[in-house]
Image (cartoon, rainbow, N blue to C red):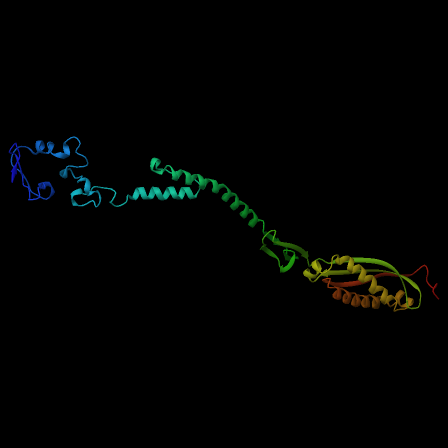
Length: 296
């Protein structure tokens, strides 16, 4: 047992010489505690990290675990994380992803943080431009097919599908949609001078009405369907006129001529794969040609 010079405080020491503040007993005998505390090591100049154990701060060695001597020392290195600080960091990261690139909490966010934000900004603008271009590309793929039309879809130039009336979407550039009117009645007429079976020349004026029955064949099989129809019509008419007499063609045989030409012409179109269907064929007029009888 040892006593202080003033006789006010008795400090017990164990055999190792450690002070009572490290596990011994401190007894207040007389005088005020204020003067005693003022003279202790933690109030002396150069006292280092020692702190008053009664002020709630704990000793410097309590930073590792924040123990009972710390008295709930707040947000130390070993204490629980601050919720507000965690939320701010999360907001800063989210802002960086969106292209903001600047930290909100000042000094602790400098250095590498600001460089990362700059890199984010460098990629943000091209990303936005890419998104806008993709949106424009996707929006341009919508189209409307009318009730009287059908759409022939070509993917990379090759036939893919036929779409009906309504709103549709196909990827632009990749698909090419060609619209074909399948309800419109088209017409073609021609006047030809031909040789009959009895070697007379007659002049026949004929008209034909037709529709597109197969949009795929109409668009892809023949380069010029109307020209193919005109050539096939001329061939069918010459064959039928050359198989009949002039009197039959000029009088009662006109209806039979029209019927025979229609059947033959439709067979030609089907063999060509033009995608056309004949509606009616009319023999408008027949007359004796200028050179009739010269071949007799």
